[in-house]
Length: 319
Image (cartoon, rainbow, N blue to C red):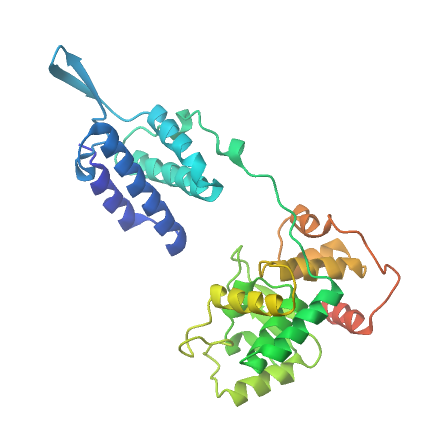
């Protein structure tokens, strides 16, 4: 028998997925098991994937048939109402799990026979609103006026605004990732798992060294520690204080990721070429970089700002 719950437990043992993704997939699989149990009028631990259909001769069961793609289609259609994120996780969980069964239990992989197509439910892309230069000044004024930890918050948002890094890339930093003399950061943990080097604005090396000394932080400790010096602040914590300063500045409610788009747009606005911008952002595809900037027109095309010229020169000199 191919007992669903037992196979989920076996799947747990060999999965190499990241912790967050794996937990999402498990939740989806347990939910699907509950769905099957409801359809079969049995307990979840009694669901056997090779005995989903009963073939009867009168009232006598003469054979069983295994689960097929139609049931998964039916289940996923019921999940559409719960939003695309949930639908995507459910679909990918099915693909991962039934691939596992095919490889480890010689159970037919029915997913390729599904009629349900996830791409049919991809929501229309929403343009991400950025902060204009004037709004950035209002935001920073709000931060300076209301912060309970001015040095930390100023440094955190200055790094986000001047490097274009993802919030996770900044919050995960340790002092051992910094080169104070050359004013560079080595990003070890990135979204695409490719390390890259970020050039800091002039003077940031000395500021970061002073910040480390004031807070008595060791090289193996976090740049932005949370409850313990070895544990960084969370993305949610950073997002909450970002929203706090937006509200106090009477600015629209934005995601903290909009700062990365703001960086990209302002850089493009000042004439930086797309290939350089793509490398700064750590993108692997030029189209991704275009998506960050193409909905904005270029202003001040002939204005040259000294600080940015120095930034570009320093960035190019390391190549």
